[in-house]
Image 1: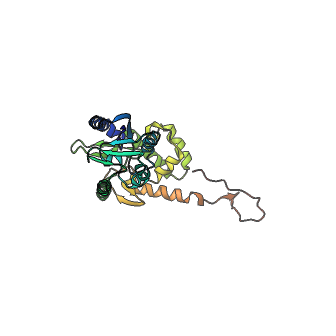
Image 2: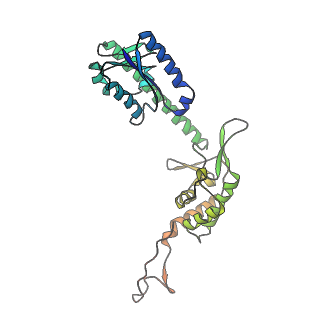
Image 3: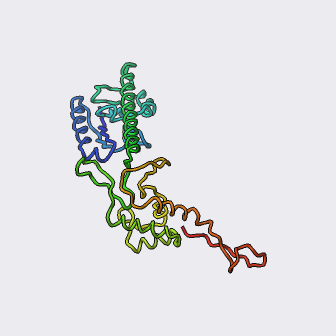
Length: 294
């Protein structure tokens, strides 16, 4: 019988750990034992639970293009699927004899002649794989909630900070980035005077040499987001809520609050014609107030 070897990992990091190579080696041995002719070896790097699984679909399309029945040989059920969608999608091709599924670890073959017990074994393996992912997700959520409660930032360090391994514990922690932290503080101080727009402060920061992530040019929108980030006074915003944090503050909360007052009050500044408030006299010429820079 003709066969397609399907080896899958979820991430590029797993591939670099030789997981795919190990799968391919085991599946070649399987095909030799079963005297299958290997038409193609497919190395797939994609999640089995998220997205459209485009690489997976290419394997199925290749199998469908063959004139004879093709055995899709997989190391284990969880390398093939972790949800029941694929079971439903492939039902017609299995029943018509277009393809067979050969699972090496489970020593299980699913084809047009499979018994109810074999299909039950397949479904149970999918159920266990799906349960593993759900439990893993729950564990990650619990871990993240624990970190947040302890004041630990759970993402990439904002501009002006950097992630650095703790020399004692080995865990990564957030520390000030010497040069950029000084420049970020100047952004808050300049804007906190109330005399400059965010666009003007962004232009100043460019002159100082402040850049965004990976040396990208600093944008007005980045400065706008930076000004509103409570991380810089020693807190952190997670899913819309602000929590106390353990990293070193870059500015005082007083300066942060002053910047927010300026930002929120910017569009409410009164415009005047000569020495009279705008609109005070019906004889005054029409003046269109310019839109403030942001």
